[in-house]
Length: 256
Image (tube, rainbow, N blue to C red; front, side, top):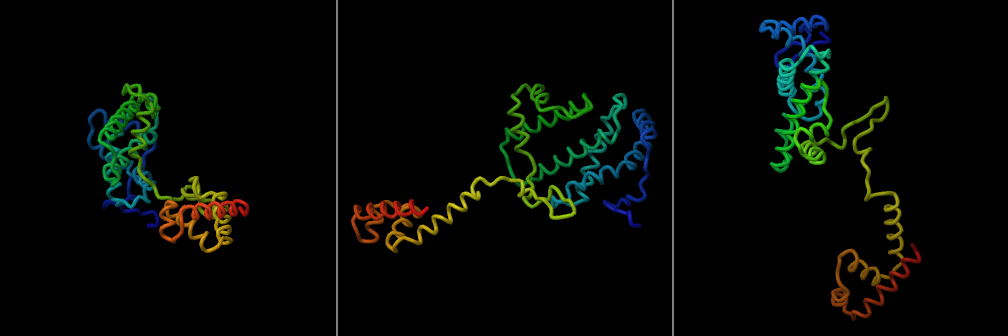
């Protein structure tokens, strides 16, 4: 009972398990048109689908929906599998199942990209599946671009545009301690330590100014007002604003 997992009404603990030699024999029977063996073979590989959909647990999708989509990928893999290449069925099926699930997630994604870019991405994915069947391995981007007769960069851009977004708080590594999240591996070019220290220095320097000087610099550099606008607001000439501003900046440079 501890290993029982029920999904889409299927009790996975009761599913059959086949060895590689037996699976090869079954595939040959399936290629010969034996539908009963085909059904048994699919049942015997549903655990493969179950293991794949666990990778997508954090997407907020219904597990039953993902399981059904994964089963479509499994069936496609069975229909296109070629035993003459000497590759294990699971090795070939897993990328097919993942691809089917990713396609489902893309089609249900709230983020939209241009039609032309999306069309190019779908063409690239179709070519990828075709070449995967032909080569019995995942093709390179260059091979996909060559088949489509487009630049490699165009394929990369198209495929990147339909990638599923992930949370910054998605864990990427865990070693019996604190998890490392995506956000821990993203470089922040704006809020760096040097910027933080610089902001503290400026804040401390501002405290040394008189109230009028502080007010002028605030309006000029934080509110984006011109010297004439500042002069009108505090009731002095533009020349006086210029002189006070210059002296305040000179003092702050010394302090910083």
